[in-house]
Image 1 (spheres, rainbow, N blue to C red):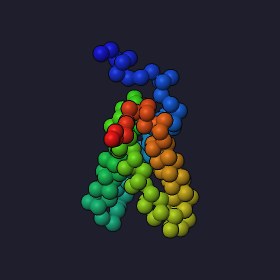
Image 2 (image 1 turned 90 degrees about the vertical axis):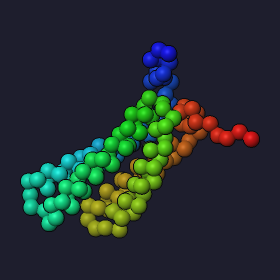
Image 3 (image 1 turned 135 degrees about the vertical axis):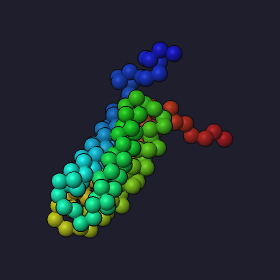
Image 4 (image 1 turned 30 degrees about the vertical axis):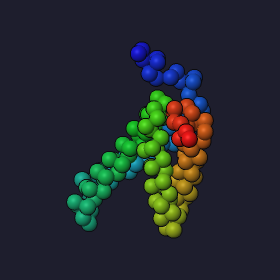
Length: 140
């Protein structure tokens, strides 16, 4: 099989799949940036709990890899990529709710995260997306 048979041309990828990949990619970048920020502050500052802060930063980086891989898979129209992308969005919803119940800058961040997660979920479960990824329903 040639590489063009394995990976559909970008023109054959629906805009909904590209948009879902973009949302997942942006979430991945936010998680990775947050993880790096926590790690840098841990190493250059005086955190209350060094081990806890180090673990938190490493966890954010590890969690950022999931939507990053899902975004890449969506761009390549891989059927496996929808699962991690959907799970990421479902996990983002309680985080958004927690931010929305906070104060200050947490509220707008919660709004943005909630809108992104719901938008991505709608895009990921749309029939156009499932067809483009080769996901079929059960047959009787």
